[in-house]
Length: 253
Image (tube, rainbow, N blue to C red; front, side, top):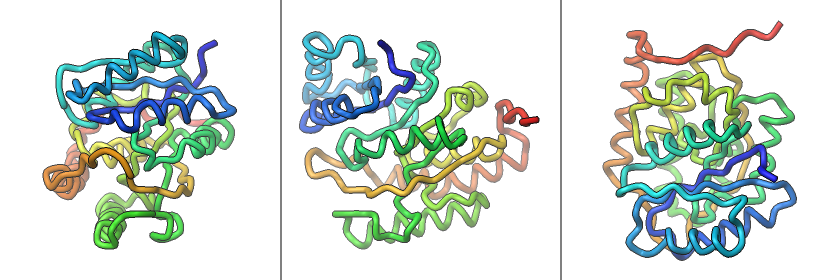
């Protein structure tokens, strides 16, 4: 029986982690389905997923293979559209490398399904920086103050605007123009939250512990960080010029 919730995991060279993260999600008490959006990894990540589909998880695990490394944002947009076509009610973004703890999936889900949020954010910074493990202090501070910078520029009251552990109600995704999302790196995460905020959707932060990967290679780069830094200003500029597309959340009577 299909779950009401799809977990989207984008992958590029995640052979060390992908089977373990899939099994960890499927071992949870609540049923989640998984869509792996695979960007033609040369390390054989796709073959591992396809073996698990064929031998064990054909009714819960799915893969969409793309032609190359096309960016995190486009991977999630691809997954969002797939989820909407297949009538999921909730859609969750999650990394493959265990920096996001699968045990927190149900908490993100409950924030939307039970507490009424349209978008729930797995936040590293609700309690300062104490919830970030195994990052060098310089990277922790850079990330923390980047979120403060986003709050200052956008006026969003979100402690962790760059967070990539997020649950969306399908109604929110249908209300956004997904083809109008501009960014592909960490700025994508900010853009999605800012658009939801400006359209009037309810956002709730859920405190999580973020643990840096122990296997595989980080995909962070100077180009991604630069896009996020300067992209925040362009988000405000686009808003001032009425360039956001989507349907505001209908009022509740």
